[in-house]
Image (cartoon, rainbow, N blue to C red; front, side, top):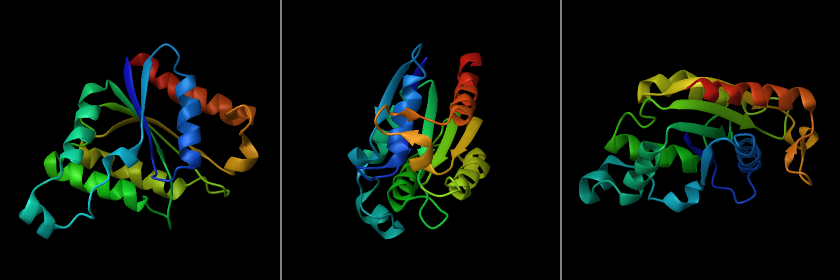
Length: 176
C-alpha cells in the first residue's frame, strides 16, 4: 500500500511533522511518502486571482500526489482552533480544481499540540468536514501535551498508552 503522509503545517519545526515522521515508521510494511506542504506554496486564494490567473499548478501537483496514493495520513496543527493558514490555502486552491480533494482514500487523521487539548478542535473540524470533500476517515487520534508525551531524542511517543492508541489507529490501514 502506498501511503501519502503530511503535516498540515508549514512550520519547519512542526511537532505535527515529528508525529507524522514517527507514525510513518510504524507503517513499515507499507511505502510511505512524507510530503512537505511548503513545496506547494501559492498566493492566498481569492476568486479574483483564480479568474485572472487560473488555478496554480501547485494545486494540481498536490492533487496528483493524493491520486497516486492508496491512503492518507495527515496530522493537523491547530491555530486558534482551526487549520493553519498554509494548509487551508492549499486545500482551498486544490478544492477549486477538484472538490473531492481526499478522493475517497482511506484516511487517518492525527493532531497534536503542546497543550492538553492536543489540537482536538481542528481534528474534529477535519473529521466532520471530510465527507464534503470525498474523505473516508477510518481513524483519528489527538495527542495532548506533545512535549510531555514525545521523546525528541528517540523520535517516538514516550507515553505507552498513547503509543498503543496510535498503533491501533494505524492498524485500520491493514484492513484496507
